[in-house]
Length: 128
Image 1 (cartoon, one colour):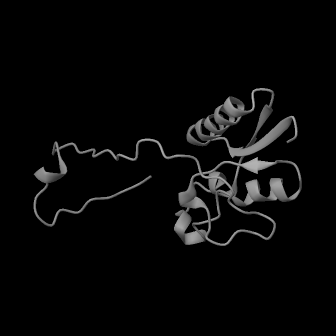
Image 2 (tube, rainbow, N blue to C red; image 1 turned 90 degrees about the vertical axis):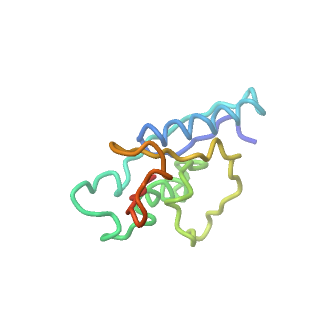
Image 3 (cartoon, rainbow, N blue to C red; image 1 turned 135 degrees about the horizontal axis):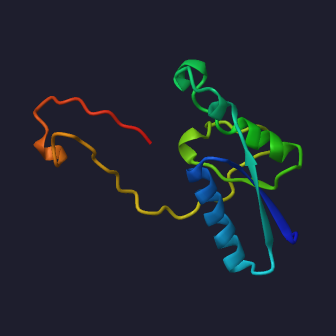
């Protein structure tokens, strides 16, 4: 194993947290390993005026990370699985998926305190 691992990651707070968690776990098992985070702005980060589903959805947040790895400028990429396309570019694969943290979701309402309080046939929006 090389003495340095370069992790490609988006620059969002969630992405940085995820990359830092991978860094922490890598260094827990390999204390002498140096880990460098490479912050990348993706196409999905730049497009703020158009619904992402309208321009491609999946892949908009990972393409630039994949390119960094394929160019040899990053060793691994850390990203949320929800945005990773089913088919990966040739030469890339998913060797590791970390143990999931608390999977609970939050219910936010200005009128109801719980999902059970919603009227029958209420419409609920979701987001990640």
